[in-house]
Length: 112
Image (tube, rainbow, N blue to C red; front, side, top):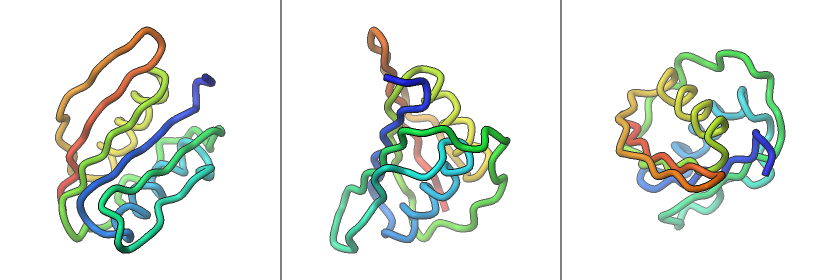
């Protein structure tokens, strides 16, 4: 697994909220290999496999229509970068983390 490989799972809110979350992460991780789709979906997934600009990312992503639970999974470095990027762009509450041998998972609640 590369240092930039990341899977993002989102629940709550609408597809526009999921796209806003992905848009913020694109600054750090580049264009996702998979984007969230489907208005009828209750869980949306995006996967990133490349390197983005590596900058600080956006500081303001706009207002979410509802709370969105986001789970980021990947290498510890990718998860840290994603968590930091989301916390700078949204009102975020850390809901916990789990670490494996080479992978980490963190859950955040993004609030409108």
